[in-house]
Amino acid sequence: MSAFDIKRFFPFLRWPRPTLASLKSDAWAGFSVGLVLIPQAVAYATLAGMPAATGLYAALIPTLVGVLWGSSALLAVGPAALSSLLVFGSLSSHAVPASAQWVTLAIWLSLYAGLFQFLLGAFRLGRLSNLVSQPVIIGFINAAALIIMASQVPTLIGIPDLFTRAPETILERVTGDPSHVLMTSAFGFGALLLLWLTKKFFPRFPGILLVTVLGTFLSWVLGYAPAGGEVVGDIAKGLPPLVLPAAISFEMHRELWSAGLVLALISFTEAMSSCRVLARKRRERWDENQELIGQGLAKVASGFSGAFPVSGSFSRSALNLYAGATSAWATLFTLLCVLLCLLFFTDLLFYVPRAVLAALIIMPVFSLFDFGAFKRLFSIAKDDAAIAIVTFVVTIVAMPRLHWGVVAGIGLTMVCYLYRHMQPRIIEVSEHRDGTLRDSVRFDLPRLADDLVAVRIDAALNFLTGAALERFVTEHCSESHQVKRVLLCVGSVNDIDATGVDTLESLQVALKGMGIELYVTAIKKQIWDVLEDAGWIAILGNDHIFMTDREAIAALADPVRGRA
Image (tube, rainbow, N blue to C red; front, side):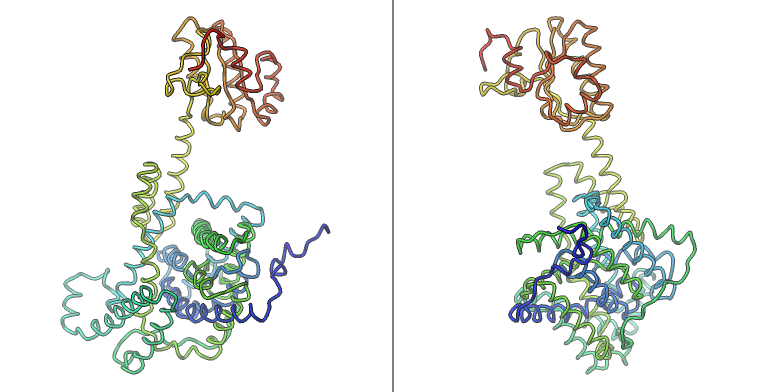
């Protein structure tokens, strides 16, 4: 094998050669996803506070880059609900939505989030995304879904200032001229109802496409826009303009760094869940680090296209799979669909009611709600449930800066993790009837010998657990003056640090001062290497070390005692 493998840097060179049959399947799936992606892209652009055209820009070059350098063939990269919401939340306190400054900040945010993901993938640090634990994801996604739906209600019913004006003012305006609200609500709730019906009775039918086409047609026929209804409006034809972001202040750059990092982690976690599902369905392997590189480059490409951060879409990826896509070539047909729309058919989007776009956002997001997950967490681990609840509450309270909910969740996760590991499982053990060393309290076992205490620690021996082990052993030895020997079972110890070595040295000295001999059994190789390098093996002596628990039992147990 050559030292330089070009396919490592250009993974799309590993794509299988297509056949006529596979191209037919990919073409059908690709165009199906493309026809759904176009209205979704426009809808998610409005959710991100961006001009409608940038949604189509984010669905073109970034999607191409994502599939070329990603590892999951059927992952649909492009505008996504959670990423769009994070963009809105990160920028809403710094600029006016859809303004030039807003677009500039969104471009910088996309570049930073993409750079973070690219570096994580390039340095093989994909597993750092696991810092966003499942409880944090559950709390954040449920909060985000609630926020997304609430943010679309004003557009859905035609009252843009629903949450900013006094209720009596809004009521007076609506009762004075109810036609606008009724007309807008008819489009919005009608779209929701039709989406629900197609999902329930025709789950494989692209309901989003049907709702968009029907809503656009009715808007044009009924004169919705001339009557004062909000529509998408003009979208310029042509390819995305490749742009360099305008200069912003250093303080603004610092604001975007933390938001970009959180967005990178959350969006990749969202994409990673889709990749796992696709990999299980297709029985394929995928590389999380390569996917990070692909996702990162896609975000960078989106920034230079004048758009906002993209991510992997679970709904469109599922549609890709169900429509019969066999390879990444399906995405190329999706791109062809978007390209044709940008070049020739943007005029058709003029009459799309914004209430219909709100429905297109609300319906997919509704499936993100899973309050039953909180109940499951309570039954599994109450601290995990607490993490999910704190993440949920902080995300809601910190609105619009949603990333603080994730930061709070990760911080509490670290605290709980450290607390758990500061409470290691340390037990006194004795010989069970099957010949192994088991919990003497649980199985009501007598000691191996009257003068022997056998102790097992089921955790790493480090700065978090060392003091607990030393305290446990010394307390048990102090309870009885008969104890002259201690057997330390370390078969469950997989890791040890300098504090752990110091603990063993201190314990040996303390026991020796009490006239007690220390024995150790079942030391694993990686632990043995550390202890040998530290010189502790030589100090303890090979006659005080047993390779297995059975050897220790045979050598130290009272032969008069039978097994329990």
